[in-house]
Image 1: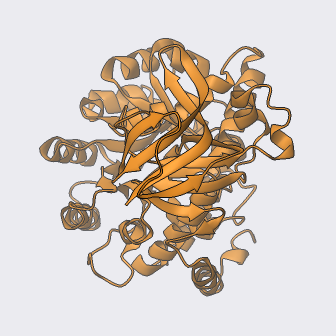
Image 2: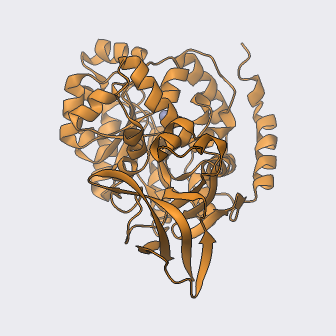
Length: 440
Ligand SMILES: [Zn+2]
């Protein structure tokens, strides 16, 4: 059956920028078939979008969905102390734990307007039809969209690192026919992956025609360590190993230098900025204006719940538009239009789906959200972009369509049993004793 979204205000984008228009949208299968005035509702499921903004779903370009279990624990710690605490919890997590924590992440993303995420997870599903198959299974079962990577660390002659690599590849093979799900490699960082392992993963990307995602230049400790060990920045170091010769989403890049940014622009690397995580872990402010000026594709992520502590991309857009102005002492830097583009169009480009996702146009994939404008924070409606970035909190998300299917309608989820997920997570938190993680 076709779906007609009627009477809404549509957020559109073209070379001249963002604009709105009162139009109807006809969805056929997983595509936007037509955008026009007063389209016929015959034979359609009709969604009345009166008083609502219809906009592209947001794309969270860097997160660790399983980390919802780390929410509000291990807070207010220095970066490597924090990493140590969260590591202890995740070492005890099972494949099924990753399934439930990822489902919780998906619920939070649906309720705050995100339709797609790039994940770096800790377990690969080893049975596609297994009862609860890690992050990939959660995405498959919920009807959501994701690009999944298994976070990998170590060296190419370590048995454990090779085993995890093998599991990641096996999962890619198993889920290769799932349309809303794709895979990339996830080398964790240059300080946790040895050079030979980074080369091996890059070669594996080449062989499979996929990309990879990696944390880069996130903390001062990382910068100092790389300078001491290799005499160069992490970005120059991985470039020298060929990491950027395949499509890459580099997370953070807080300490990227001008020379680093030139390399990244030239190699077509996308940078996923994570402003709230960088502030919470005391890592500082990325040079976002310089990234944009250098011509780098800047997209945006929330990072995991252990360092944010939410997956709300509206909140992330708000932070991005505010903190970089403050850091640069330039009120005109990083505008509402810029950050909205990072969270939609640029995110789609980062995952190789430019023009298909992150935009409402005929022929594009139908990943859309409906936002209630009849809320105090949107009144008066002087400027819709400012409303979305400076006033919204994401909770105005009323209805969501992913791949042409309704995943939430008027606040009701259609594909996930929230009560069951909350129950499973509470049980898991008690078993893993997560509330004790902040104790000394
Ligand atoms: Zn991360």
